Image (cartoon, rainbow, N blue to C red; front, side, top):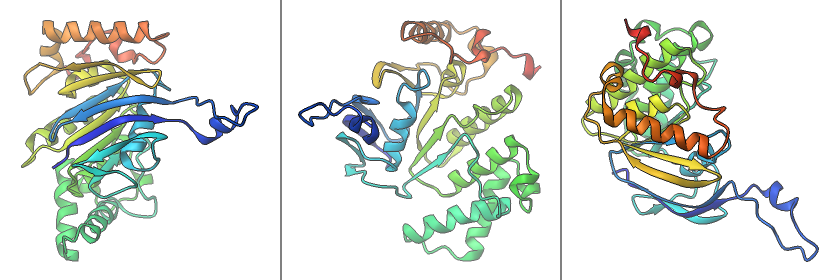
Length: 288
């Protein structure tokens, strides 16, 4: 299972609190997150979207257990999250591969750690087979023996995706994983993530942080727009799968959702973060 419950979560950095103690030594909290309540059902693909600094990446850190809420609590399958756990894996924007390990070794490391801590008892041969299987799924089988510095950014991100999937966790987190990539590579990896998520024996629960509107509409079952540390809008993406940009450009529901999310960006503040790719929604020039 992979049910996530975020129950009245607020968060403030300790240094911000210390800087705002008044004369009576009472803390005046400056909250990055303010009373966030969400539930993510098992197998749902949720996109968190909003301006930089709105709290979405901070919320992801709390979901991972890398930080603890100032108020409230987070639960995974009714178990309180009080630290990192291998029932959750993540793909970061900066690839996060071990530079001294080859591609296959990076994937093997994740599989081995998950096997040990979750009591799966995989042999070295089984771990290697699983690593090779997932490298093949992301079209990186030929790069198994290459180091990260020998791979492009997009290729490194494919290896990172392979590692996260090969760990076979119930929950997958993505923290703006394609934000540093060129448009062509980004769109290729968006399609890859969607295909792998849909084709699994059971769909994982996904929380995907982005500020790219077209990416959210393409991938998500549900989009949560955050602003000033709060949930401003929670929208179901009622568009059949599989989706492609050419069809979405002609889909009135997609256009209405794009317009609503664009309005939210402008209403919540200057839309400096609005991805350039969204200036022309689902522009298919790269795909022709």
